[in-house]
Image: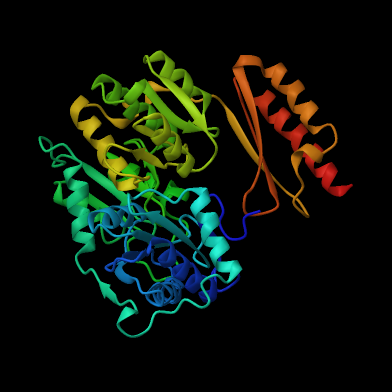
Length: 450
């Protein structure tokens, strides 16, 4: 059983276990312990989003790292992929992100990158938990000049902006684009507008005034409606909505229609196939991606493989099998030829480059795939219950899957963070899939009441 780490680091309400300064300090000590050897000169990067609670957690992490004799490089508010980039660019031993991503401001989290810019594998996270709860580090306290120190990297944003601009084809500019850009009052507010403006675009910004409490509040990738309405009202060419830590992207076409991660993946995968840059002609997606994406990949001469939910599992499959592109319906898009993790700004640049090259509006490009009707329902329970213990549930799922056949699928999974079971049904007939979802949800509710 994991004690701290979930599918994407440690996350919870700030100043409530496990997101306390005491745990943050111990996490800092454990990371430093793992990266440190007999040689001197170890460094760990710490970055954050715009939540008010980031200040206390940043100081606790830095104190823990320094107390183990490792130096800290503070970069301030910077998108999660920017911290991965700075970690590798600075040849640091690890990078730590203080962010709860798309969660509301009262939450916070800790994500860790290794020196190669990839998120830590499960076994290393387990080692960190063991170090914290076994008290193995208690007696290890460097003294005198062996204690670590902290320094601030003032030009981290500038370095990351240059990296992003270099990921956009040099033969193109964005001079003829009007972009509505929603930064969710999060970590991208000081980076994303500069990237698109310096490439020549006219940029109308939303969500660029963080106050520590308004991150993701009715804006950004979780609430792209405001961005889409602005695109339509201004007659802009495209809308880009990022989440609080900048690792996911949801888009609006010029008509104000939302374009999700599945459609963006289909557009980008087609272009990569044409350029022979989609390694093994394979797109990596998760079990949540629409069957329409799978069908579109087959139609264009490629294929799609699925992983569990979470961009880290997408990346793990890509690295293990030698694939180059993947992502999630929610907007995590990973261009492994450019960067080691999901990057919303970089994904937006890749999409704009395709629009520029093909001279077509996004609404036309998005017709590359047709989404199957999909319904997702959440059932909150009084306590966590394994789905295999619910009477007749698995047999019912099997029977309903046979009814759907090749034209649909059912996915039932428990939440990793709360007593909720998520039921997703996909198929050709909207009425049928809603009826199936309702039947399964009622079985779960009945078991909870019993």
